[in-house]
Amino acid sequence: SGDGGDVSAEERAKLDYTSSYIYNTASDCDFFVNIYGTVKADGTRGCKNCSIETYKDIRVGHAYYLTNYVKEWGYSYCKPVMTPSTHSPCYIIGKWSPDSV
Image (cartoon, rainbow, N blue to C red; front, side, top):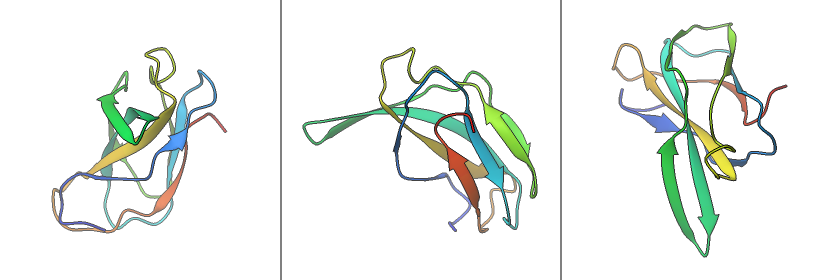
């Protein structure tokens, strides 16, 4: 849940060059999502949007593959950053994987 602004999940290890995956299981809104690559080394993080496309309208009950350059750009971890399409408070509930499922 959030205030209508960006929210993200925790970083997960990106193991291969495949697309990431997201499934909107029970949110009470549609949302936009980008995949951000991150680096974890010595307690520091770098963060960059690695999405090839911005996926609009991630609707409840739908799953999407999210093409990205996380591994190509040298990142070892990634996370989805989501914005409610209404920019209003809502619950974002679902599943995601850094690699294709």
